[in-house]
Image (cartoon, rainbow, N blue to C red):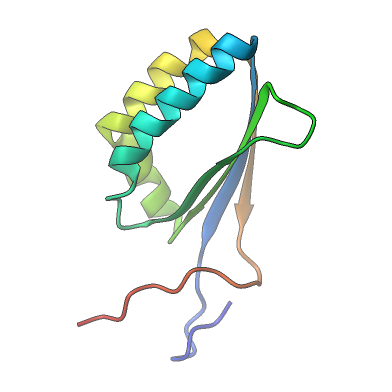
Length: 115
């Protein structure tokens, strides 16, 4: 994707599919995600971080994450709130599937103008 100045954007994205053990684990996992989002909201390179529940799959959560670039993703992974989530999440889950993606085209959130 190209910005108005002609430079190619290098967005970096992933989807993560989490399968929780049961309804109680799903509720607890959602609470963990809510606590973690408090820190994620202040990460400058994290453009989108959204948790979804697929229709007819109440024990599954699918995350879509979009970062400004791979360095922004690495910075996200190093944050204390992310490290805490990675440590705690296992107790609620039976499976995790991750797909990393490089941006090729599309519409994405606009970045704030430089001042």
